[in-house]
Length: 358
Ligand code: PEP
Ligand code: MG
Image (cartoon, rainbow, N blue to C red):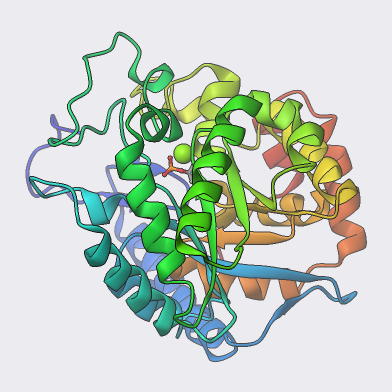
């Protein structure tokens, strides 16, 4: 794109992921009309965004927001969010020269929790740094393969003072309105989970706090494969398809050449989600999806058909995802999902769900 002369008229289609050049007047007119139709559709979807997302055969899917800051939660509510499925807590720790105090954190989590309706879920993911996301005040050695190294809960377990103060802050904010949940990122083994849960229980006992649900991100394939064993102990799962896809396909999610192939609708990834849903439900636990694919209109009917209980999506996508679910039947979604699982590529899965941009 750097070779395109300045001032060239192009059409950037965010939904299709294309950049078109040599654009004709007729194409520009067609695009403007599409933009206007999209604007009208969004306005209509927003009007009913506060209603639940029930399929035509009355199956409810919870639609919640992914947020990364205090202001986000205020934007999520008018968009129809039923809570927060993923609070990426990195914003509390990044862009500063020393770690936030426990009290500072309590204030931030309380502010978010009190902005939600009482009882709505607020899933706070513990700090997910390391690897490619350095923290200046937490020096970690340079690594050959950062995505396979000290990341997420591995950092929290290696340097537990940050994890402990964050868990205490979350527990202290648990009376602020929303129903707080703790979620650990990058869990790969049962040992990771048990050690992290152990730290949580120690801090909870010290504070004399009531229990709150504790779950894990499912973003390493080993967790999906062993979902039955994990389901016996965790309170919930949230599938991080961004990482689950990169680790399943062994393709760096930010790789410039490979990125187009890092598609969570690859049947290998869908198969992992399918077996995880069965394991979770078998143990009476819920499973959500909080990776980017949960906001993808081609993925929504498949995820619903696989039995995913909750979709945690980007804030602007909430009204559209809810509207889409209301037009679907669970019966059709189940059929679609089982066909998707037998395809041989992500492209073949996508071909089952033609995406009408109008
Ligand atoms: C994911 O991996 O899908 C996810 C939601 O976490 P993040 O994108 O923050 O790694
Ligand atoms: Mg992730």
